[in-house]
Length: 308
Image 1: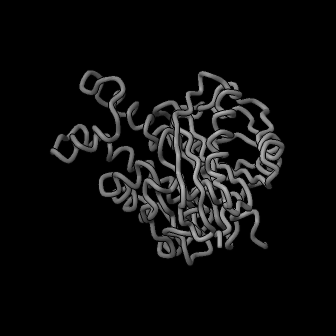
Image 2: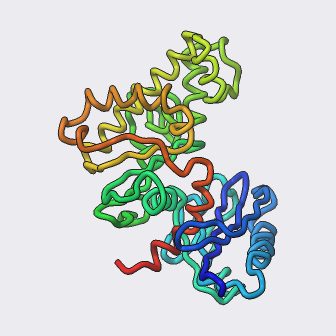
């Protein structure tokens, strides 16, 4: 007997992955390909459809299609509204197009929210009612699970914590200098290194390179990460004081550089936050690691199909 399953589509600016998985998070089939945003929406959509058709092996009991993609977007209507990493994808009715092509229910979710749901269902957030999942990569955002339910906000922009101005000045990101994204995203940390030590670091220095140099004892690299940790810690305190979560789960570079970046930030968090907020909240790395995108792609359907 075939197991009822979902097809998940994880659309990013670099790669797109298509998986077939179960409600329990078992991945039964997977294929990925370069997104190549420069070619525009239609060729990418046609390739997605071709791979989805491969995933629908004869006899497979597919209940729905589930999509994880960066915002901005109208989530429930499934309209893509110009993600920065997908130029030209403006006002694309992706949900409608997929429904017309495959005749299946389609569910779409912001990738930060989908990551939060993945950790909530299958990872470090399992068993907790109030969690915040931080995406720390090319951008910096949060997915919010409050009282056991995903919180999107009035216009689907809840969790855009990277836009908060955390200092009067600093690396430019998200349209302003001194934002949390400017200090704690991958590109932000790279810009921070160049501004703190001009001439020492090459243009395009990565957080991974800074991490390696800091571990070798290079004081300048350590100073960059300590500065990033200072502002990340202030951001953690603001999140905890406002939302009082049980867990803040860090993904991306926060997960990979937990000891160098997040643990020092937690000391700042302790000093800045209300004691009751700090004591109630553990800051932990994402448990799902590099597989989170595959599971997150299933979570739009898993969340929107479950009774609330």
